[in-house]
Figure (cartoon, rainbow, N blue to C red):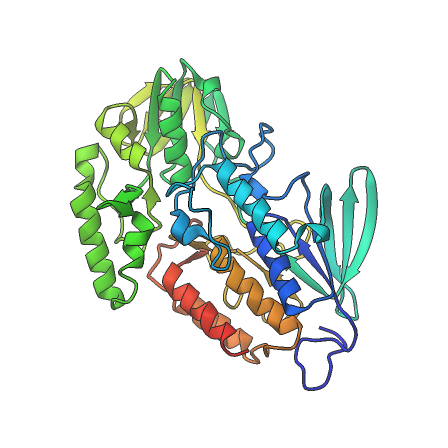
Length: 441
């Protein structure tokens, strides 16, 4: 950051202006932390007409949002901001409407809303010679510029859908889960869902209630877990194991899941490709139930398509009207210039604590990671670190490049090399690292 005061790393000699991009949960907690740290001039630009990010349900398929029936996967206990618990009356797994109300209450409680500018999209961010950021913004039909001392990117990683090409020509409808909103349009149709993540399972369960047939194409073996294990939310059960040595924790967690779920073959599924915690598990109690009741039919990877006929890698074939690709997202920031606009999708981003690039001291990415659990309460700790840095209360590490390289070489677990796992972190190990950094202030 330019014009730093002597002896106070990160703080300029004048009052600073900070821009936060995105008013989802990561953006809201970033504004809160900047306010707490005493930053005098904060603006949060949100492209849509409401705060809450993808927790704002919208019918528009071009907007990434929750589905009509979405409930959170992690429990309310471990999904609450640590300084703002969810209401006692909320269930273990609140609906998207309840979560959005919770975010609105959070923003009101911490005085975030006066700093939010809705319907304002960041089109381009470039760094001037003095180190400040020049932002080109669109508000309705108007174009304007803003110059800020620090830039916080809180746009998440669910905005640029990946749609793998199909071998052959499919004559039915093809869409990404990004555009799925509700099950009713698929009533009476034969639906094939591609993928084995949380979105794929949610969509398969929902469409199976109204479709003529719902099948699921899986290219590998996944860890499918119920949301409740032994009478408690799964994340709470794993939380109780957090103090155990990692090898024993992994072994015990795998044994508990096997005891609760059983062998994949009982559900018509292939054996899991890797060990628990080295693959991001999928939590969905209804999906496992639907498999056992014959409401969802698991299939192998797709070999090719021909008209309405889909041929699978194991030699089976069936006809479908719709293919829904729950095939994930690529990390991209089109408003930033290379090399920051994108990374190797199979590698973790070169960011210390998943937030700081080595060579730019006034750029922060908040919430750009994926734990087994909730993102936004960990993003809260990230935002606190960044806010402490730019106000001179926490020194920026001098050896960031070496730290980044060490984090990439030594992930929390031996994650599979895939797009899905490139930003994976262990909730407990990552939280511990973030709190350790905060403690240095």
